[in-house]
Image (cartoon, rainbow, N blue to C red; front, top):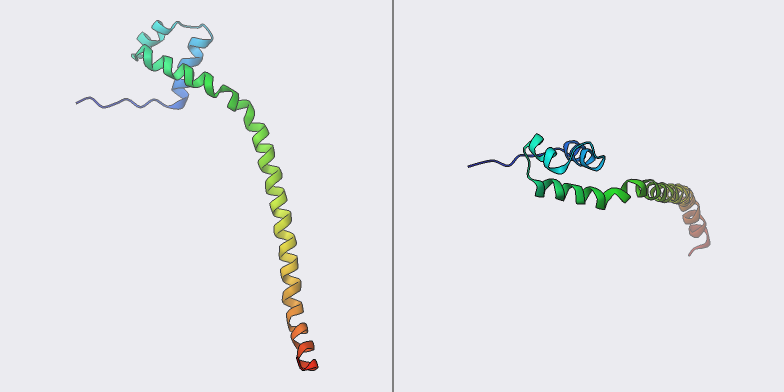
Length: 101
């Protein structure tokens, strides 16, 4: 029984880039590394489909950073409010006790 070979992402990218840059042809790369053309063709299509995500990462990262900053400000404000209410709690209960209510 034959086990499947596992290829790293770096290896796959290197093979695809070798084909896309014209350094080698598909058949040459397949013979060189001993892999089937169908597999390399699938890697190439996945590579090209996901290429826009490389440049979209910066925009998404900026949105995430802004959201994190907003949430940190909210946590800070709520912490301050909580501290104020903790300090005011005993004062309010003593005022309530004097009025008899």
